[in-house]
Image (cartoon, rainbow, N blue to C red; front, side, top):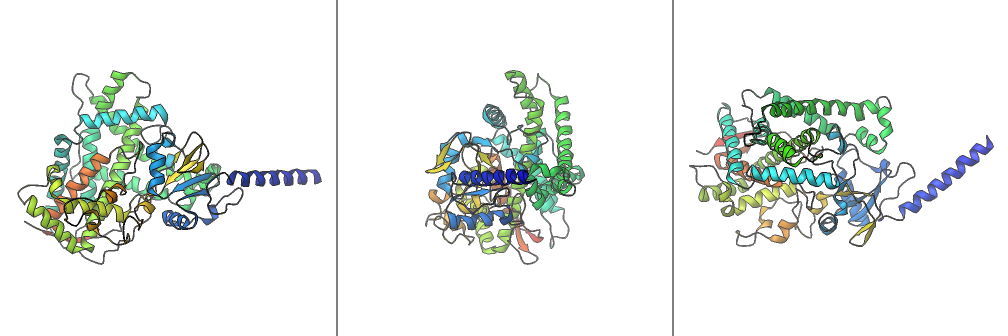
Length: 490
C-alpha cells in the first residue's frame, strides 16, 4: 500500500513537472491546471468574447489548454502569416465537435488534409467555374430564385406582420439545391426542405453546449451515461438524419447521370471527374461529404447574413433609405439589380461589408494545425498545435475600424463616397483568408449583393417591435427572430 502511494506520488510529480515544462514552450496565456487545463474558466457561451478579453491581457497570440494546447490568433497580421504565408497550417485538427458535421472523418472539403484536400478543393473549384461562377449562368440562377421569393412575398396578404425567415431560407436553399442537384423547391411544397433545415439547426445548436465542450476535451466521456447521451449520441443521431437526406439526393442524381450528356449539377460534374481522372480520392464518399459541406456552409451563413442585413436596415431606416435611393438612381424599377450594377452601387456594397463586419457572424474559424515546428511572427508554435483564428477580434479592432461598436457603412468609403478604403476592406475577412478560405465565397458574395439589393429595391422594411441586434450564440452568431412590415415600393 505504501509503495503504491509512493509510485502514484512520483508519477504525479513527474507528470506535473512535464506538463508545466510543456506549457513553457508555448505563447503565454491563462494559467492552466494539470489534467483539465483552462476548462473551468470557459464560459457557457460567447467564447469569442472570452478570447477577446484574454487577448487584452496576454496579447494577440496566446495559448489556451483544453487540456491540449491551442493557440488563439486575434490579430490580422498573425492570421495572415499563418494562413497565407505558411503552408503548414492548412491541416485540420480533427477535433470534435467539428468532426461531428460528417459521419466520416477525413472526407469532403472541410475535413481532408494534404494532397486529398487539394484534390477535393481543386475539383470543386473547377466544377463551380464550369457552372459559371462569376459568369452570367450562375447569376441567372440566383436571380431566378429571387423572383420566386418576390412572388412568395407578394402573396402574403397581411404585409403588416411578415416573417422573412422561410422566404429567405428557401431562396438561398434553392440556389444551393440548383447548383448541387439541379432542382429547387416550390414555396407551396417545401415541407421536406423545412424539415431538413430544422434538423441542421438543432444540430448546430447542440454543438455549443457545455456537454459538447466536455466531449471535445475528453472523448472518452461519450461512453458515460447522461453526458455521453447529451454531448455525443444526440448529435450523432442528427448527423445520421441529415446525412441520410443528402445521401438520398446524391443517389437520386447518380441514377440520372448520363456519360453522353453535359453535367447539369455538381453531382453529375463530380461523377464526370471521377471517370476522367480515375483518382481514388474522387469517390462516392467524398462526393457526398463535399455536398454536405457545401450545404452546411452555404445555407446557414448566407441566409443568416441576409436576415442580419434586413434587421440592420430596420434599426437604421436612414441607411435603408440611402441604399434604396442609390439603387433607384442607378438601376431603376423596371428590372432587378445585376452584378454589372455593382460598381455603380458603392454605398450598397459598403452596407453589406458593414453588416458582415458588425454582426461578425462567424466569430471564430474552425481549428487548424501545423505539421511541423514553426513560428507566427516570432512566436514559437510546436508541431501538432491546434490553431484558432478569432475573426471577431480582427473585425472589432478599433485601430482599423474606428468606433468599431458603431454601425457605420461610411467607414469603407473615401470622402467622395465612391471609392473604397482598401486598408479597411482588406481586414474585413468574414470568409477567412489563405488557402483554406471559404470555397463558396464568390457565390456567397453574389447572393448577398443580388438578394439584399433586390429586397431593398422592392420593399421598405419597417420594424413591428424593437430590433435587438444582440446576437444569439450558436456555431454562428444568429440574429434574433423578428417580424416586419413590408411596404411595396412599386
